[in-house]
Amino acid sequence: MKQYLDLCQRIVDEGVWIENERTNKRCLTVVNADLTFDVANNEFPLITTRKSFWKSAIAELLGYLRGYDNAADFRALGTKTWDMNANENQAWLNNPHRKGHDDMGRVYGVQGRSWQKPDGTTIDQLRKIVDNLSKGIDDRGEIMTFYNLGEFDLGCLRPCMHTHTFSLLGDTLYLTSYQRSCDVPLGLNFNQIQVFTLLALMAQITGLKAGKAYHKIVNAHIYEDQLELMRDVQLKREPFASPQLIINPKIKSLEDLETWVTMDDFEVVGYEHHEAIKYPFSV
Image (cartoon, rainbow, N blue to C red; front, side, top):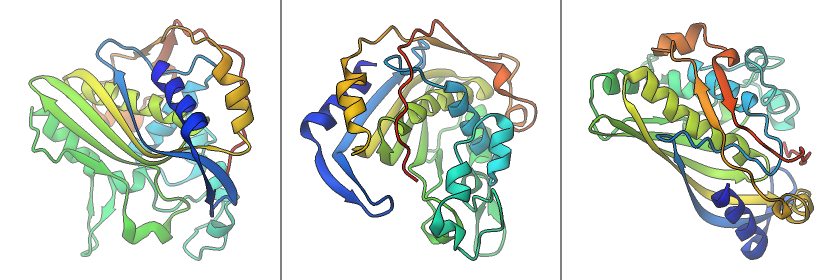
């Protein structure tokens, strides 16, 4: 919590106002932020200065790992996070590649599980990483990226959290996740949960120990209609101790994640929090 609150305070104190063309709103912005999550000791980075709906964040991550491209599939897992971008983003609604209601296009997990090659075949980035790590192999390229510049016009949104790099030291697995842009009051709450959970899951299904997860953000910002709530409400609250994330130990493989895993296989214990804050969301 301290590093999250420190980043929020840094944006309030040092941020520069930047006009965002996509949302037509101003953002108070800083460049370069680094967060570290202790997955080994299960210090789950769940925001305590407001109520956080962690299940939705993990459900979204699970949808990415499955390569989903439809908001209805994400809703079935327990999250509505893609409803607006799939169905209320005017640029996407006008896009001739959009297949219909709830279609997201070739975004995020689609790229991670089915990156298209010029010859028409696809690359499953995640499968290669899982197979290598399960054998104790780190070729210094255990990288899953969603940032496919050539297919931006085929999806409703460019990826914000765009690349995940796994590193193996002995029997301990580390993760470095890169994010080009972050809505700190809303998005970071989700993103840091996902970074932590991704490392925990990958270590579990590859039989490795989880180490630390490193979260690198380039453009960290607070939208103008979020600033008052952040500055005058959330930053004035005292944080509680970090809770712990319990993952069903029966999850043993990527196939398990692809087939039967649900939100019932995740539990958070020891979560104390302040009241919820309803931050505006910018599409």
